[in-house]
Length: 350
Image (spheres, rainbow, N blue to C red):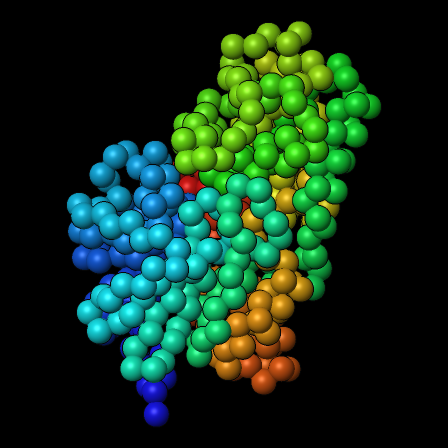
């Protein structure tokens, strides 16, 4: 009988540790061997001896941290290519969260566990879609694991933004969006919706947008907002970190309409407290229905929840005969607007 993953995939203070492979997945501090699901800083930290990740994740980590800071030895693993680490067969499949994001599938003596990292099920023109992997244990986040969170199609939210631009042609629409993943997704969705004018960026967004372009994701004409006068920004769309839209940086804009692209914009009180005039419910995480659909799709008899609304998801899974376990790993959670934003955390996060 195959061993239960609980006997070989351990929860330690520094993260999930695969004992027969001698590596950590998304460790919370520097370790000897790290496998990284994606380049957001709550999952990708610098200073490891050796790092394994998708080619895109390694490239984005270099942009965020500086070349070579992710790990002394770096190995790129494309999706679907199995390797052996110690006694463990390991491969990666797309997670659909941001460019390069991956699920880590591990097999040992006939037992399979999948660590999904952060993931979403909505289509995204900037990254490959989530691929369900049948497994014995599925390790998931639960950021939006409450029935109140049901994300509308992102295209509907982009249409709201463009309707507002048409309604207020003399005002600047400034959209709060994290620098890695969300900013590029909003830009790509705007392009698909027919917005062919330049999109202006806060300086913190420029390096990662340039990296996406180098990695084959076209974003159209992007200009720094700092070099444009108020007259040029009237009727324009500006993408900025969530924190920047509330500080004096935004004063350079022409009567700004403050927007924010986040799953948390479903909560009206949160939008009001942040001074958001036009909330855009655009999330790079699964909503309640998508989380539960994913548990059905992977068919795992057991689910481990790393962070978020663990109890609600575990309770719902139990109704369908799925055993749940709350890992309560402290340090994850990249789309929480009450945390420092992508450009002010150290190391940088999104």
